[in-house]
Amino acid sequence: MASNEMGAGGVAPAESSAAQDGLACACGATFQGQAKFCPSCGSARQDARSRCETSQSDFSKKRHSAVNDIITVERVEVREPFILEKALAELVGTFMLVFTVGVAVASPAGDAAYAIGLMLGIQIYCFGSISGAMFNPAVTLAVLISGRDKISLRDAGIYVASQLLGGLLAGFISFGATQRSFCFDYEQLGDDYDQEPNFGKSLILEVVYTMALCMTVLTTGTSNDCPNQYFGFAIGLTVTGGAVASGGFDQGSFNPAVTLGMNMANYANSNSERNPSAEAWLLYLLAPLLGSVLAAGIYRGTRGNEYEAFKNGATPRIQAKHTE
Image 1: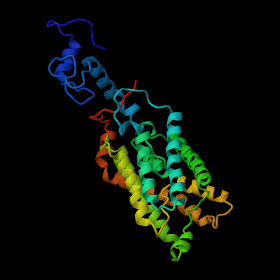
Image 2: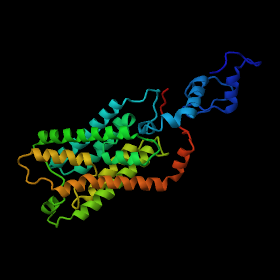
Image 3: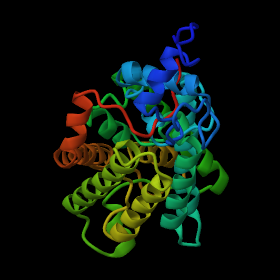
Image 4: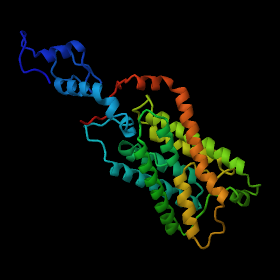
């Protein structure tokens, strides 16, 4: 706290020290001389000093654990979202993604890849500041094992449970809305595209494009490149690009929550011609997880400078939202 006693020049000693320090406001501007207010946003110098001192001592302990804090900058400081709020955001966002998958694939329009990518990007913008907008157990795993305390093991487990529940609800409701269903089974490609079913082909495509998705999330949503305004756009287009590229060779799940929701809804359809084999379940549930592990490894291998900064307790030049 600054002292209430005034110095010889009529300036409080703490404030004089602040002027000498070249104190930076949370908005990024620098206080000029002994100015009491920020020339850019009008914040009081004492408020800025309090935020600065708190962030220097507590940021690495309090704020690195929440990935949602580094993809957006709040206009007003607010409390950290409760875990139930984060879980609801993950459930609703995953629901919208999987529901769109079910409806778009059932639609005769044939634009499923574009609809899915657009919906994913929009939902990321909706819930990014609440939960980090992962909507995918593979993405959650990638963020967890990438380290830097972006998400705790407990929160990751809650996220995955919420995503799987959202996927299940979406699968059944999309089936109810369209009266059509499908399942993820690599053998189905032989029927649809008149080619020999190939487990290895689908395995490679699921791993590679899930890896691409997770690398995009790690880079645009958790790295030193944040905050930015393109993260949702980049992530959504990565899914669209993967789906378009692999179409005809693989069904393109890239997400265990999507696989679970669509496959379980297909079991409920008495008119379905095929249900997934045990091998297909393993492929579309586990291959994305392998892709997420590879993405985290590549991220660690290419972002060593960020891990060094985190280890040394560096604080961000652009402060995200902070709560006491």
